[in-house]
Length: 366
Ligand code: GLY
Image 1: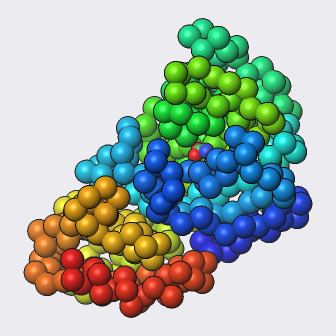
Image 2 (image 1 turned 90 degrees about the vertical axis):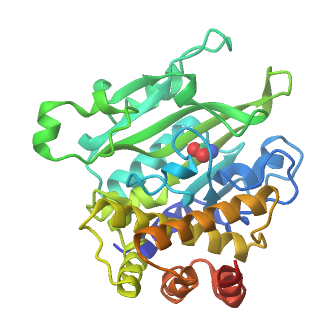
């Protein structure tokens, strides 16, 4: 399946389960003092989750444009050096606002991955929140019980607060979560070390693909947890990682999300991908950052010297620096990649097509 077909299959599956398919919110956030960019699919539903906005329709699904440029794995300076972290990425998500809860979310996630996408259950591991004395919370035995319907006990792994209690930020909706991890190593590697030992250990071939959050609390400014007025399901699946798994690749950049851009970088620069590490990193940086900067500009955030604008300026300049240093590009370069990039993504995100002229002009001027 192509990336575009995979995105459609997610929406079709959840639509068949009674979800309204809704558009992505803008990646740039203008009205929330706690966030500059959308960093998770649930951001646009914060008010519903906190009970201050109408929850109807109670089942929704979408593909959300997200940007993460800080945090353990998403330090801007690291992106491009590995094969599975990005600044901008798409998050496939399904939500239930006071409708189904843990069992429904787990059953649907499993059915979609195993019955629809045909991932091998032997390669899937799930994690559950082990509890936290400090928060006065016990292990999520309920989620573990539902997972046990689908996977053997040695595929269910306890996780700590860091990995298995999802929080939007310092304050706001939060709750225990179950992550689904995929082992895409070779059979020989799997025979040597069981996948369960590599979950959450930074192995590039054993990675989290889907996080299912059981939102039950609102974290208050004083750090306390207040129960929500309804139970909410918030899931986030890393689209680029899913595509990589389904296309049988070992790097997100080898999928048809990134390859057309990388081929264009290669054609324009005369350098080949896959020959030297410096050039490869540069091409990955440029391909990743092209997406982040284009979507930001399309959503109304131009590069500038302050706040969100400064983040975008830093991302764009980092890409330019790599193009200059490793691909010998001494003139404006990024904007030349737009026809290929927008050709690939414009169908799913028409704002790129609508803002194409502005994106090109801003990139060139910057
Ligand atoms: N809100 C779920 C996630 O971002 O993983």
